[in-house]
Image (cartoon, rainbow, N blue to C red; front, side, top):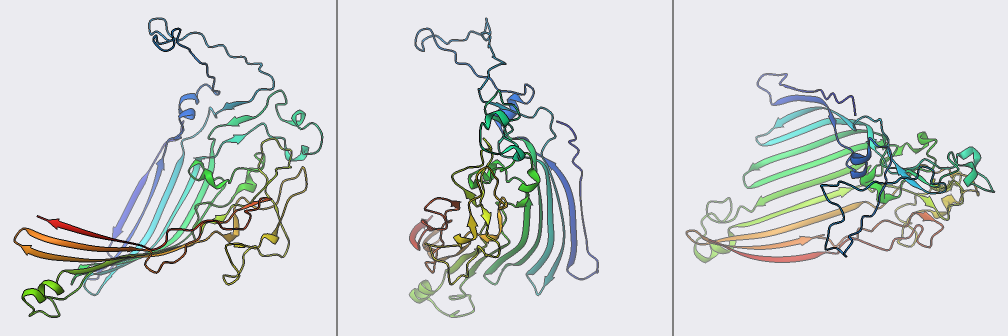
Length: 410
């Protein structure tokens, strides 16, 4: 590993004396580890070899003694036809450069508004495993594909967690913060962003966005499987101004005061766009012996349906995709920029009542409602062309749930 120089700096200044305007910015370069045990332990050997050591008496005696060391490990370097796993020996540390520039403006008494540009660039990031013994695209065809592999004497050769992925992220981030005063606080945030990469890495491997042609990784650059264009969140707390010492019914006393004081409402509103779809194809008829298979797009046919046309049985226009010809890679990008999976909209609400019983003793009653309006948040549709699930949705998020709580505080 080399090149681990991580400068960082930041600044903040107030351009106008006496005004609550602040300009902030900063830059930093950060490094991470590989995160994979195999890479950490085998980076300097270039390959992985294993052997079983068996106890001579069914587990009573440990098969290895410290005084004698490990028994010799025989490795057949001419294991023709076998598959193996390897790692990159000379690599750089994964690097993430981050920068931001923002303006904060205070107004009224307890309000703060912030607008910021936030960006990042990742290099040498951990990518998904890759079969480097894949048949090149220009040699795909009928016949003995094994003989056209780069190393025809071997089977699959898996490059484990290569450190060659890259990413870019740009965003506009807005925030409105009403600090707690007069019994109320509000925090709202909105992000408009775009994230592009050429491999969404091990953290997002379940999306199935594996490389199609490892000899032409430039074609893998597309929207990240973690990209969400718009995200909005609001959280609020409001202590209702009823009862003694409050704005309304300040003169209440006795039982009436106990009933109307101590009420609080709070909640969270969450709205976010869906992730870009990862469209693949089955069966894999490329004959590449290791590459993925993606379909072709039908020219002039939009895969996205109008919201009024979407149903769980047909979430997107499946007629926009056709399987590739045998012994050929499809033309669909790693992620579809024109087709988004279902987004999410949720409102959670809470109503609380605190009642003082005597000095040092109080009773708190809570009502919490998740998914207040019982909105259906659909799961992801099937995205594998050639399966009955293609374009269809078979799952949804949780329905409305209400829970009550009673707490005695002493």
